[in-house]
Length: 319
Image 1 (cartoon, rainbow, N blue to C red):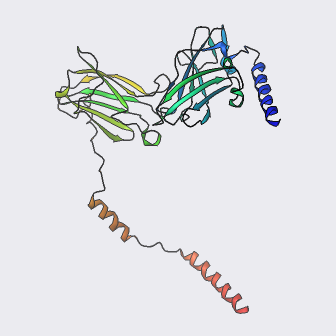
Image 2 (image 1 turned 135 degrees about the vertical axis):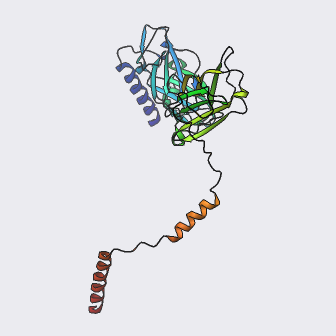
Image 3 (image 1 turned 120 degrees about the horizontal axis):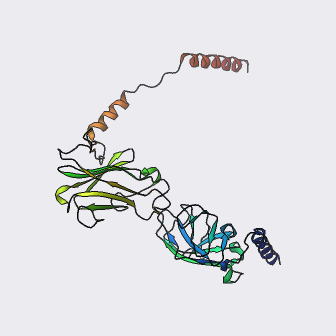
């Protein structure tokens, strides 16, 4: 009996929430799919919808629920609604598209999920007809890195007599992401008189310069033609929501290697990270540690100890 009353209470409360929005109360059938949902490496899902009504207030969709098909885990998704140009919106118009973009780090397991747009909580969802929910099925790759903290930007790109260089920064560093510079970044090269290419020559190298800065170096002898521009893009992040793509026109420097495009300053020195601490550095560190003297107690602290010991002995004698 208590269980039935609980379910009725949930239904009544949910109905109240829907009817309380008297602008455009609607059944979920007024909202329709606009393509498939997408899931990303940052644990985020994007759900596109449209409507057959003149306009629908998206706040009427009270619950967006994801159910893991493998474990049965239930997640109530939070996020933001965007229009077709990925500007924040509160409505969707007839024939137009709105996108629900969930927050990061919500669908973190590599699994298939059912995503429900519903007017009611999950507890009563199974009690209602299918017309009261809009269901998507999406496969998520599993959490790998954040997209929110990436702010990708090309600082310069140019060719000299020996190599092609692209200096860039802003993949977030290890504090926020684990972006692999070789496998998680698309390098789209545009050549003079040739089609663009997203495949780097095998001789290409990407060096970390520190402070979340990097340089791509390609020997010119391995290029099809001179590169006129380059685009970088972090894979599996939505570039309409986050700053995960960048583009730059590239110049040519007809001088010796290691000069910036404007010839003003030298290219940053490339210092590869050591695989282990060199022995001489390690020995120096140990010697310095052994020479450190123990810290002496300040004189006034020693004086306080003597006073305390005096009273301790005094009262001990009286006892």
